[in-house]
Amino acid sequence: MSDNDEKSPDSPDSQASRTLPDRLNIPEIRGEMVHLRPATLDDLTRLDTLQAYYNASGITGKEEKAERAIVHTWVRRSVAWSNGGTPNESGVGDPEFRRTIAWAVLTDADHDSDGQVDAMATDNVIGMVFLIDIDGWARSARIQMLLGKDYRGRGYSRDTMPRVMTYAFAAEPAGLAMHRIWVAVPETNTRSLSVYQSLGFVPSGTSRDSLWNASAGKYQDLVVMDTLADEYDPIASLDAFGMHVIADNPGVQEVMAAHEHSMEIAQHGTKDSEDSAQWPYSSNHAKKSKKAWWRNLGRSADGRRGDGRDSSVVKSVDADADRPGRMGEGGSVER
Image (cartoon, rainbow, N blue to C red; front, side, top):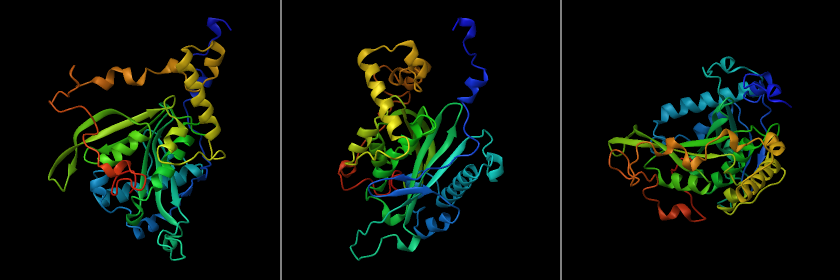
């Protein structure tokens, strides 16, 4: 192929790789403690029964009423996408045509050993997990989990989030072929920050004084963390919490192959042109994440922010956050 025959960035083939499907068959995903199915509108009342919005201000920085409203919006958008509706047809459309996927999180666990499933009153539903702000052009999405009040701190999100991330990063058609997944966490929520770091997320920025901390009566920062497709390790992200890969989950084989390919590139430093053309997460399209210029904005040479505060994101981590049996009760990971 000559230089003149190369595809233009505006060619149909190039544009197609930057669009999302008009209709998505949201897959079920299995874990060791939970299983996920596409969320329905009927699940919204179950969240109320679960008191899933309890302490929302301490978890996401939003008041309960606002948190409930946005979750309702996410579920409606997800249902609309699975039915082939456009973002506008969901009734709560996104002006930038970003998409949303909502899964209901179910468990068969009997923690109190009374012979009955803990979540029988809500048909085994204990919460939801979301991929939101799914941007086909930028290949970026945000992940967030919501758990009922009595199901936090039991390790459910440790079993859930890495499996959803694997699906998101997997190449099409097995997954969504995302390049970046990010989270936004209040700076005081150090337990969730620690968990996200264990999943491979790295600090990428801070939105200063963007949240109101009602309990402290002052503003607080919102910390943004992210991880990229060629950084994500589907085995290590589960192994960090004592979980294991389930090989027949959507996207697992693709992401594991992609990770092996990334490791080969890191070891050898090169790849041939034919391989590069087929590789969905080519480094030709991205800066090295830890060297990107924007990660150092507002920081002086000694690593401190322009306002004099330390730029380290996780200022303090509760010792319980890394213990196998706990994960941040009230943290934004397990809510």
